[in-house]
Picture 1 (cartoon, rainbow, N blue to C red):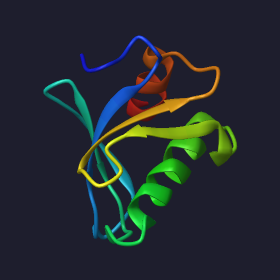
Picture 2 (picture 1 turned 60 degrees about the horizontal axis):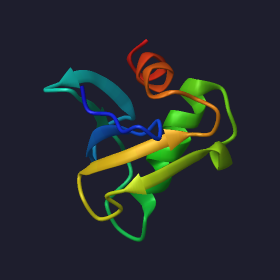
Picture 3 (picture 1 turned 180 degrees about the vertical axis):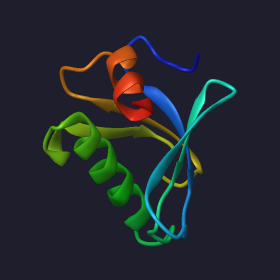
Length: 91
């Protein structure tokens, strides 16, 4: 399971999809498709909005910790454990 002690989890993003969706877990990383293209931070912003919606929190409570220019990104949410974040995304 890919998680850090600070509550961050790894996600693998596939931009330019037909819709935003969580595909499931593959090799310990959550796979997510996003409609947004990977330019000017659009895919990162879409990822934060999707995670915030799944958690029921404002987007300002979700942070991109690492991987801003990579398909594999580390995210965390304020006041949320890695396990709770993973469960919310996979629900």
